[in-house]
Amino acid sequence: MKFISLGAGMILSTMLLACQYNAPSTTSVSSSESTPTASAEELTGTWHIESIGERPVIDHSPARIQFLADGRINGNASCNRFSGTYSVVDGKLAISRSLIATKMMCLPALMQQEQHLFEVLPGAVSVTFDNGIITLSDEQNAQVLKAAFVD
Image (cartoon, rainbow, N blue to C red; front, side):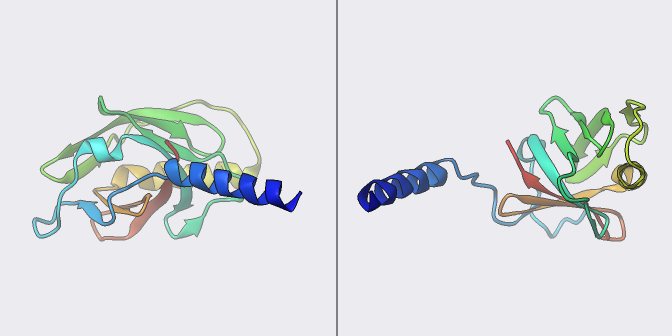
């Protein structure tokens, strides 16, 4: 029995390593010319939002953001789905100020978290990549959100 468990553990470990996301170790999309710029393709994918501003999201929150290669952005703001557009021009991130969202009601804490996301997200102007985590920051270099790569 121990032999089977050990073998199963080794196989599972090998499978997990093979599926590991290889994000750029430290790349930045920003308005600063001194930092390396990343392309919009590096943003492409789905990211689970871990914090909005400096506040961690509520445990088990469905908050996620997806950057599509064609310049569209969508996701789940905590309660409602949203969509809009984004671009990366001359190393500077721009997210549409007029995000479209569904209008469902949910728990007050999730609604408050969602409202905070909608307030700060359009202010993001730079992105930092670090081992599968993105950090979006505003003009004052304050954190707008932090998210982990999903797919």
